[in-house]
Length: 298
Image (cartoon, rainbow, N blue to C red; front, top):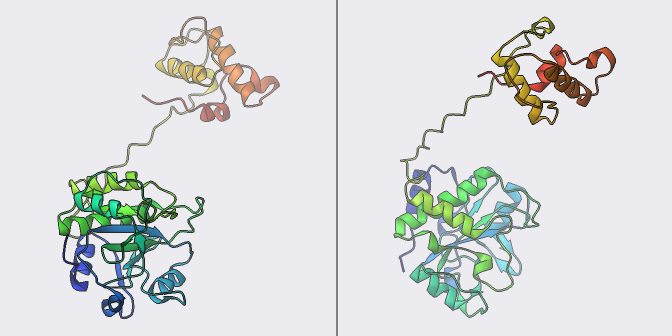
């Protein structure tokens, strides 16, 4: 159990986690505290909005609608990974859920199946709505999933919780399906890694990116005259291995460094695979077919 974060502290820890935070209208005093208690808080709950478009989604989560007044969460996570804070205090996001699930979140143990709706979740959970249609087809950009990870890790770190204090709406309230499009077990694994220091609090700076692997390089075309009986070169061996990989190898033994009739027949099969005909499929490499074969330069 924990005392809820103040508005200023929430902004501070989210920005320290490296997130872009937008403060929406009068979010710092926007809540449903008149309808029930807020806190103690026990976890973070993730939802999807079933909407598209950042501005419309943020406005809906701030204002709510006639049957459910806003705020409908504490923050909206858009597809660019930005956080839009819309409420501070009790919010209409969790509804009634399973007391056994709440107990598991508090104890940070394995979640049971949610089969009851007997406990007020709006009191106990921070809620974040993520912009997604929730149809299983609308993509989840990596920057958005990373933002979910960072938001959750920042709050868990502040309260001394583990990743087991983060749940999906579908794990809380029977009949709910959100978030749909990624697994909460996978998200909790990401949060655990961030809390373990593989990401996480970097003083507002992202870790240095890993260097990109070097791009493969290929042998330039040595000219058709290079390929003749008696020629020996590692290039011919590399070419032969590429022909075998393309299912064009016609070797009984090899490939070897020496140009042979087996090399010519194998290369002819490659030319034919490329739909070359006649003299263009004579088994002697030409620049067009050679460039397509991409013989590695070792």
